[in-house]
Length: 203
Image 1 (cartoon, rainbow, N blue to C red):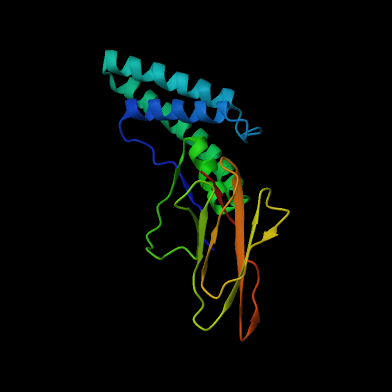
Image 2: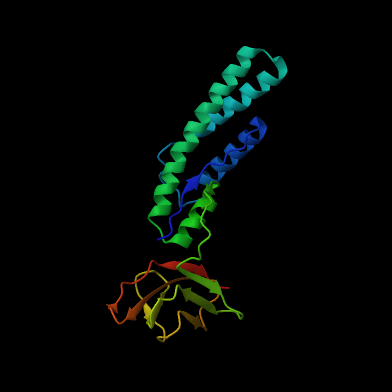
């Protein structure tokens, strides 16, 4: 099962860090998905404002004490962002993989890149014409039959034709709608469980 790991990926330069922190705060505030962040946004915004002011003072004075104060305020902002990172991680964990990726993107944070290079076990890709999707599973090692289903809400499922190949083409889907997909295989050992659900915005 693929797992999303949310990362801060904070910039090193202080000016870039402040700009990035403001961007994350704006993303969280503007997206209705983030209705109850574990850290009040007013706290983050106040800490960013304090850091911004401390950076200006540091640039103008160049005194060591101002630098130390600025660095302490940066640490506070980073702590705020780490709290939000954990909150976004929880939302991503509760959603299907593709939806989780969108949640992270909407938050202004990043997904930690995996060091692995393996092919996904199940994926949905845009087809060659509007309203078409190509869903592809990892093939079983032995002879198998594959059952496919799709849904508009992740609750009510429609079955597509079964195949003996580990992929299926779907046509006539509604453009602009998000669909959810799943599959299961049957081998000589019996019928398997349904896969993890993947989703795709159909174009």
